[in-house]
Amino acid sequence: MNSSATPLIVYDAAALRAHLGGDALVSEWVEVGQCRVNQFADATDDHQWIHVDPERAGRESPFGGPIAHGFLTLSLIPALLMQTVCIEQRLGVNYGLNRVRFPAPVPVGARLRASFVVSEVEEVGEGAVQVTWDVIVEVDGGSKPACVAQFVTRHYF
Image 1 (spheres, rainbow, N blue to C red):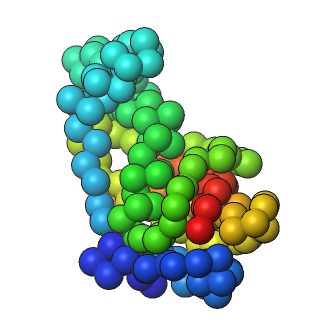
Image 2 (image 1 turned 135 degrees about the vertical axis):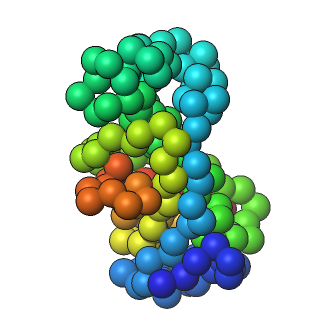
């Protein structure tokens, strides 16, 4: 298992291919506080009380308090990936997602980290590859993942 203290350095497509199905690359923990949740709510116009009203969420939510938006958790994946791997490239882009599920909520104040496994590397042009990453975002102390996804990136060397 590779942690962000020693990110994997990749110089070309062959190095990505060498990690197909290999050990998971694991990010550092990141806290999801109420300020971050509120900022995400403002950015997305999703001010549902279960996210932004701690008092009401404490009284009425089945989760016992406010939870982060699922899409906030999802939006952290690119930054968490960058903690685990440094790809020396001309350009890298987020190409999309194949599958996403949110098996467990993220309580406000919880810590998250993500693990990434290279599951596919496909040539998409001269000097370019598309990488599919199997991602699991876990909550510190949680029994189920907060998010399970296939994240797709393109890299131009």
